[in-house]
Every structure is written in structure tokens, then in C-alpha cells.
Image (tube, rainbow, N blue to C red; front, side, top):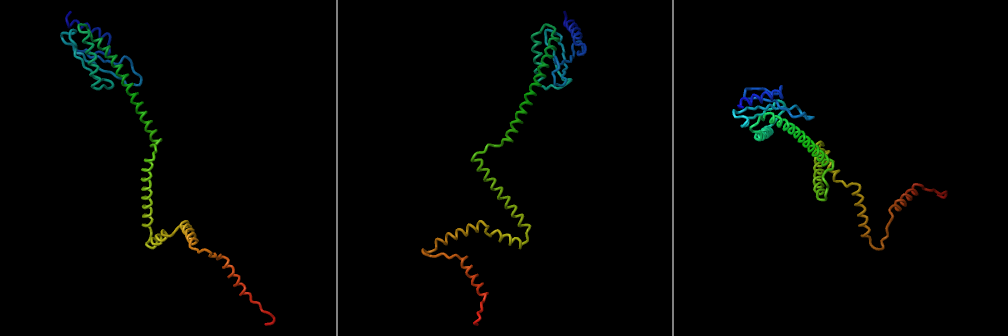
Length: 243
């Protein structure tokens, strides 16, 4: 049987199998729309067009194959892998009508491709979720505190507090008149109540140490009371009849 007869017979079979998918371009070229064996839930429609050009010595020589997407997308790497797969299968079927076999294999590979995309997306989503959880845990848990890290933080904190106080002080002084500034500075040099108390208590101890042995301490409060009583007596003058 001649090559033309073999090809004409194969076209007839293909048209009966793929009545809506096949387009006969010429007596040696066809195009067939190819989809996955079944629709994978959660995916967009995906369809490729397989172009087949037959040489004059077909089926003893492989046809020239080409792919392009007509629904969905396919990158160059995916396309090249699919073409290599059906070409390798064509090598195994040299000498026989092979178009139906190649199309069937391509449908299976498209199904695997789509399922692989879904699996990859699920894995990527899970990894993204894991990273988000780890980031949230790190944010809420904070950094473990050590003695060294606390010292570093304390130095930084103290500097920030001093800087803030200095800024507040400068802002307060800037809003004062010269007279108010002078009075404010005087107040700043006065001792606080606690400082006065500590100072007087220390002086009292120092005085106790300076007293000589045998020295009698005098209660000043008693002296004040005696003086008041004397003044009262002077105010009340008594006159006798003899005067």
C-alpha cells in the first residue's frame, strides 16, 4: 500500500474518532484539539492544538509535530517535554499508523501535567501558610532574653530616656521668660525634702560625736517654757494694802 493510501485511510479513522476536534489542513497535514482525559477540579479549561505534518515515507518516518495552547497556558519547558514524550513513543511505533496512539498519549500527559500543577500549588500554599504561622509566632513570642541582651537593651533604654528628658527640659526652657528660667534653675538646685532629712540626720550624728564626756544635754523646749512663764508673771503685778 502506498504512503498516500495509508495516510488517507488513517485520516478517515481519525475523523470518525475526533469528528469535532480534527481539522484537515492538506492531504499531508492535520490539526487536532487535545484536552486532558478528564477535567481536574479547581482548574481552568486547558486545551492544546497538535499540528501533525506527514513526510512522504510515513509511517516509516516520524511526522513533524508542533503544539500551541488554545485554552489555558503552557510554558516552553512543558511544551518541550510533551513533544519529546510523543516523539519517543512515535519511534516505538515506526512502520504503523501512529497518530491515534500519539494523541491518546498526549491526553494522558496533559492530565498528569494539570494534576502536577495542582499539587505544586497546594504545596506552595501550605509552605506560604507555614511561613506565615512561624512569622506570627516569632512576632508574638519575641526574642528570648539573656543577661547579655538585657544589658544591651538597658544601655539603649537609658540613653533613650535621658535623651527624652533632655528634649523635654529644653522645650520647657524655650517656652520660659528669662526671669522664669532663672527661678527654675534656682529651684533645681534646692535640696528635696528627703535630701534635707538625710542631711539633718547625718549632722545630728556628727554633733553627738563632738560632745565631750560628761557634757549635759539641755532640752531647749523646757527653756522656752520657763521663759514664757516668766513673762506671764511680769504681766500680772500684785499690789498690797501696805503700799
